[in-house]
Length: 223
Ligand SMILES: *Cc1c(COP(=O)(O)O)cnc(C)c1O
Image (cartoon, rainbow, N blue to C red; front, side, top):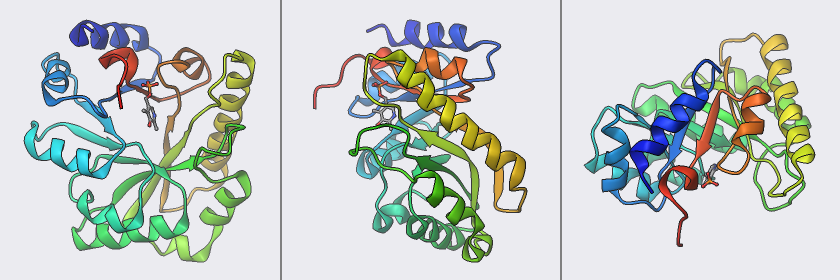
């Protein structure tokens, strides 16, 4: 894979769309990340805390690190001092822990709430009811060290483009609803994180502001 060429290609695709790229570098070595970085690109996503911390420590400090994977509460403390955006907050318990750890390092941590939009049971996320219960709860309004910046979702892994589009449309609808109807201190809806290597084109058409692309940039992963 020519990482530099791929990054430039994506920047061309996204120019003028209002959508930006998060290059998902999970399982990929630092030299490949540096190739992308050398083009001036700075937003990388990881899904495991250990890898995120290890890469943060070694790589340039002006990289924006996105935590895109499922996050366990007991590991939040390792990333709060530097993480740029946490994409996959899927419980109030986790949000509370991020708030607590954010307070310890005097940061307001930008977070996205992950919504379950796929028809697979294996993907994490809140459903619509849980989303509104969370943001309406009095306890949420007291959290001073987290800010909800938007929503994140993963579409079903399917060839059915209509289904993928419908799932992204649904996520966009929820995003607009929160944005329009919940103007309160802990919420500032700016980001809609949806779209990966296989479905980013549909996601961009449906209003994504952040696509999370791994294999189309860095090549297939071998776990
Ligand atoms: C791995 C991963 C991606 C990127 O997947 P690709 O298909 O390689 O683009 C995006 N989002 C999340 C949450 C991931 O875990």
